[in-house]
Image (spheres, rainbow, N blue to C red):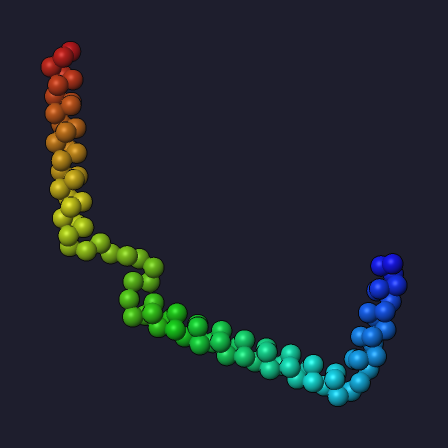
Length: 93
């Protein structure tokens, strides 16, 4: 059953693709699709590059002033807690 179906499909495709007009149309259609894909890729590449250049970060995100301030406060708080813990540990010994 599958062999018969495969044979029929092969015969039909050979008959269709044997026609030079159809073969030329298919080749031109493939060429157009490749060209359109290349143009879209180029546009997206330019847009992506421009957005990276606009941010100027080059994949490195610098923390804002508020984030730096919060980070410094939290690090000071943790260092104070660590100092309290160490001093309480020394007193208990």
